[in-house]
Length: 530
Image 1 (tube, rainbow, N blue to C red):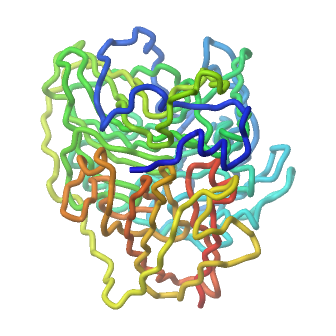
Image 2 (cartoon, rainbow, N blue to C red):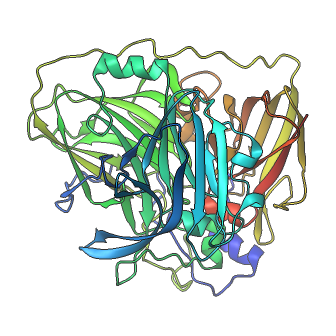
Image 3 (cartoon, one colour):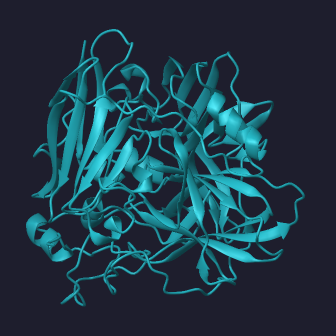
């Protein structure tokens, strides 16, 4: 298999002499494997979880309008130093909530005022929500510093884990990296049934995990300064945070825990697993949901890939562990498939301030803390999922490629006034998205609509090893999706139903959620014609 490498990038882009960024220069591994089981003693910082105040605080909006300010705040993240972040702030009961976890009900009407307290344009994209285009956060609606934007929409989505982040043209990567991101949870009847059956309580044993890698300067502030190569490859950090917590520790009881995992990184892909430090083994996890909510049933797996923008909803049974036993959520070593050419690299100005793409990373330490009296069983029926009827559907082809100095979709880059993809309202289509062999992985995200993955073709071995059916799909491909990872040389087929009840033509986006790729123009307008 031929893949694009750093030498090709330099040659094609004319960047010879520029310094290079992140990893993959070490040994290339043929899959997700553990090569270190040492327990880092530095994981002692209590994990931030949704509470009544502070970062990620739980906020339940009522029917009245509420306000979100995009601004700045200082938080202690690295060595007790105060880091200056861009954050979303909601004032509630004389408290300021930072990047709050917003909990809403399906069918609820939301009225939100965005106030731009930044020094540059911004807009909020409600990632995964099916809303009218003017409410979706298209960069055409970005507001200037000091301005306001009014959102009003009904929550139509099924229960699940969604999120909100900025989407201004050419500024999305910077603003998201510097801290603008929050979880949005939607509840419905199926969600409530699951919660009651396992006695799940948000912030207690139902915990969102927002995974983000960051770089920090000497003063402890987030550093975002991609060079030309990093804009092409994606900007990687040298530290991994979970819920804005460095080296996090979570103490758990002997019971079921639900973890709602969001890859909120700009470019880093993770191969996640749960590993026992004492038992030197994988711990089974049960995937119960993906981007668009609950799956039909739990899927028992050991590991899974999660790319920027994707969500994974998992259950873990801690009942059989001993008090004091230690576990780690890890990102296992894998082939990142963003370069293979390691020869003659010594004189290329390689930077060493980032974690390599695909290297093993400890994410979250878990310690079994106390006993519990009750025992539970995972429900075997979680949700009803109806396949999209694709009979007589049009097949539309997309090609992901690199030309000159830019990533492209069907040979095109983003132009805010052009509409290269036009579909009919109420139509159903099959999209066949092919990634060039000489390429890198691309997490492709669709605004405004959920889709279903039909098939993976020509997948790399590390993906084939995770396949659960004859269509080559992994467990992460099941259910309703808004983001799908496509590896070099791979083709993914998805089904989309463009039915909606909004008036007039609607304009959404189809783009790579490697945010440096998006800002570099790997994005197209999608017009849904009335």
